[in-house]
Length: 66
Image (cartoon, rainbow, N blue to C red; front, side, top):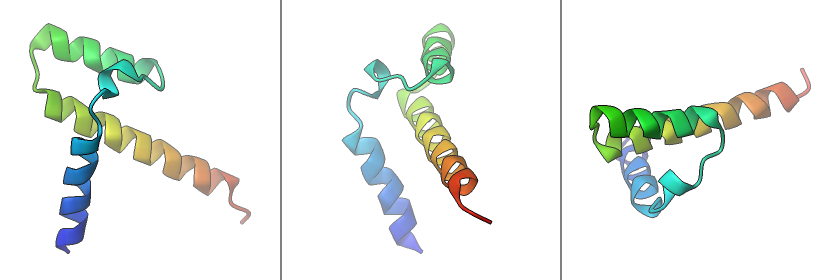
C-alpha cells in the first residue's frame, strides 16, 4: 500500500526541470497559471505528472486490440 505513495514521491524528486520540458500546451498553460496565481510548484508538478500518466494509459488502451 505504501509503495504507491513513495513511488509518487520519488517521481516528484526526480523531476527537476519539468517546467522547461512541456509536452503540450496544457502543461505550458498550467505553469503560466501557477505564475499568475502564485500556486505551489509541487501542486503543478503533481498535476502535470498525473496528466502524463493518464494520457499514457489512454494511448495504451487505445492501441490495445479488443
